[in-house]
Image (cartoon, rainbow, N blue to C red; front, side, top):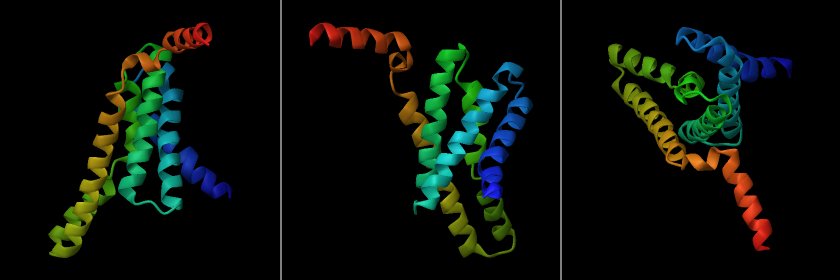
Length: 157
């Protein structure tokens, strides 16, 4: 039980913070970056537990990362790339790309093609999720928009 908690919360958090340090993110954003990466990984893991494919899990995890990044951008008043780039790191299919090249070098082309297609699907799912969430209008992430909308609804009803 505690091993699962460490593996699926602490490790992605620490890994994301480490990449935030590597990308020279200001220190005051480390906690938010870590939470973004850990939340994305938790969503990925939950989808995988309930029988989703790696591409579907990557899409869902990336949606969480980008939504949190957009929300934190408004709250912390900083660019989205601070949270998005470091938060997406746990979801990137680095091992899949590595094994694709490994099997190509070992002349196991069928396995290389399988691993390569899986990595391409995951990469495409990540890009698709980023485009999907970033295309939402900025006003949806502004608290003032939701307050005004609530006031209009009260006046109307």
